Structures are given as structure tokens and as C-alpha cells.
Image 1 (tube, rainbow, N blue to C red):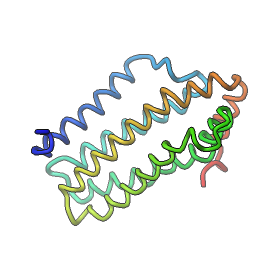
Image 2 (cartoon, one colour):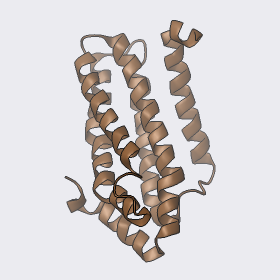
Image 3 (cartoon, rainbow, N blue to C red):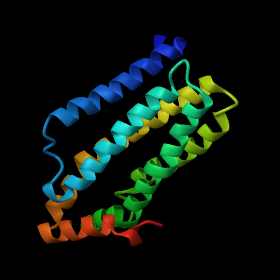
Length: 182
């Protein structure tokens, strides 16, 4: 409860927790990511490291408008296109192997929508309310962190168990093909 009374401290705790969590994960081998999906796991690592850096700067007490815009730009140019690729290739593959027709990936798609919505909200807050920008930026960072964990601990291992190595490699080629991008 006290966390709500001291927003600056919440920001520090959340950002450090996310960064520390990812640092610990990067230091340990991640058994949940099958070898065929290692490039996608590496992409997650890169996205998360860059997000952590941009987020720390954008939410610092002395953050400038340019710092806040850098976060919005990163979300728009890096995170959202990554999410779109997942929706075009990765999630249909998961739904197919599970016979789920969208239900297995519905919450993941909702995460993507929430990230896009929060990005738009951040745009409106860049100049209007730096404190609210800070709170929303931390929220989107935590959402992305959780989302990546779900993919790494459920999506990739499930695909690996249900698909042969060739099918996994073909899926990864489709994920990185230029036509996969909208």
C-alpha cells in the first residue's frame, strides 16, 4: 500500500526489479528457449536491454522531452513491429499446433494491444504531464517484461514440443522474412 503513496519510489523499484530480473536471466542459461528459437530469444534480450536503457532515461527525475520521445520512438519502431511479426507468424503457429484457433494466444494479442494503446497514451503525455508519463512508461515496461516471460516460458517451449526441428527452423525463417513485416 505504501508504494502508492510514494510514486517516485515505485518507479525506482519497478525499473530496478525489471532490469535486475532480466540481468539475472541473461547470466543464466535459459533452458526454456529451444535452440531453433534462440535468435528470437536474443531479439527479446536486445529489445529488453534497449528498453531498459531508454526507460531509465525517460523516467528519470531530470528527463527531458527528448528523453520521453525517445521511449515513444523505441516502442513505435522496435517493440510494436516485433509484436506485429509475432501476430503474423508465431501466434498462428502456436494456435495451429494446439488446435486452439486464437484462444491460446488471445491474451498475448491483448498484451500487444495494451502496449500499443499505452504508447499512444505516452504520446499525449510527453508534454502534458511528465509525472503521469513516468507512471505509464513504467507500466508499459512491466507489461513488456511479463509478456516476454510468457513467450519464453510457454510459447517457445510449447512450439518446440509440438513441432519438429525442421518445422521450428522454417517458422523462424518466416519470422525474419521481410514479407512477415506488415
